[in-house]
Length: 356
Ligand SMILES: *Cc1c(COP(=O)(O)O)cnc(C)c1O
Image 1 (tube, rainbow, N blue to C red):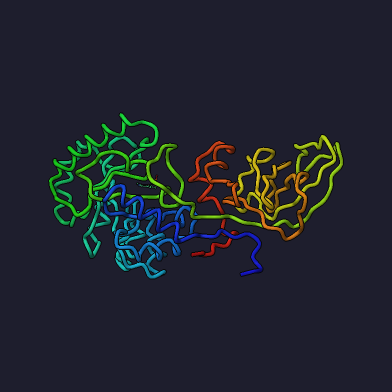
Image 2 (cartoon, rainbow, N blue to C red):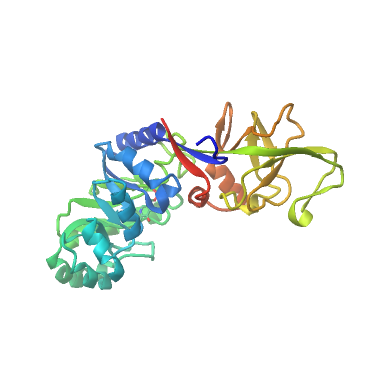
């Protein structure tokens, strides 16, 4: 693997510590959310690691195909497919024993042909994306007769920003669970940001971002450790003259003679182009500003202040180096998005490698 330029090191010890800390805090069964290749962390590595923990009940994915990939990787714990079940996925659900989240009456027609008959029913208590309404309950009671309702769930859109809205969702969900009256094995509404809310009638939580070490809120009460470190390499070091324009479109003009390094990491690797002239990386213990437009495969950074920098030196794109750190949330903030998008945007070219 030494020939790989850009790697994403996945620290599975930290992953386990995060899950354990979240369990200690919430005391509820955990479904680890591993959709989108485990938020870019490699669903295989993450699921295998977490399968060994008793406190992890199973996994959530977005599509049947993602569930199939987990089974192919040897995962035997329950897999819930959050995105429902489509006709063309039926065979996957049957062959690989995947459990659909039913959130639309049309899903029932497909689910009729499910051999295991296990389903989760989703209610919309405020997200306005997937889920039934409270007013659907009578009709639902008819439909679910042929099934084993293993779970009832809902989802928070603003657990990180709007406690009142979130609390009213919990109240509505509580009412729904009572009205549906099926006594399922799993009742779940809380995501990472949601675990701080009191929800005693729920026995299960669905955790994504927090298990990967990013706090969903500033004052999040659970200790978390970073899981992914993204590293690349310096591939050229050169000087530019005062007045030179750097990279495509010449958006950066040197106001002095400078030393720059070219890093083998571009927007095709997942560094958003919107970080051009704004973001930074870490080289040999120092922050180095990105100068000029980020290109597909390379990024140019200012290394004028570095005493030594050589071709082949490590570059930290995301992660910690001694006392300095670049977090996904730091990158997200500068590029005007959220940590989730940066995480799952680290591309396939960046090879994932487990470290313990
Ligand atoms: C992605 C997702 C989660 C996980 O959310 P985090 O904020 O990452 O914890 C939970 N539930 C549903 C329905 C999701 O789509």
